[in-house]
Image (cartoon, rainbow, N blue to C red; front, side, top):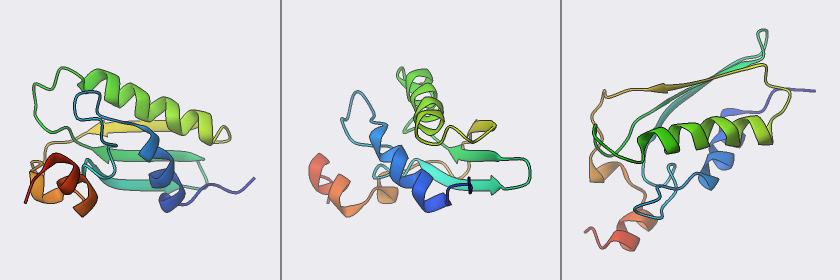
Length: 104
């Protein structure tokens, strides 16, 4: 079975919501990069959190891992990498997320 595209993985990650903001990690702008290695059947996701001390951080990272695993069972290796560069800011959110949070 062919490996999913980065776009397909990103679409699946829309199911992962920040439990405090109730907005998904994609629209929050937390997904920075998705790299797929077809040969190794692996996926690396670089993502961040809205703040370094985010109490929901471990849950969000775990949800991202299991969402990919559940939607794409043929992937052998999933790596969710927590990165802080660039540091997240509200400008990274989608227009839809900005509207939902009243950020203009």
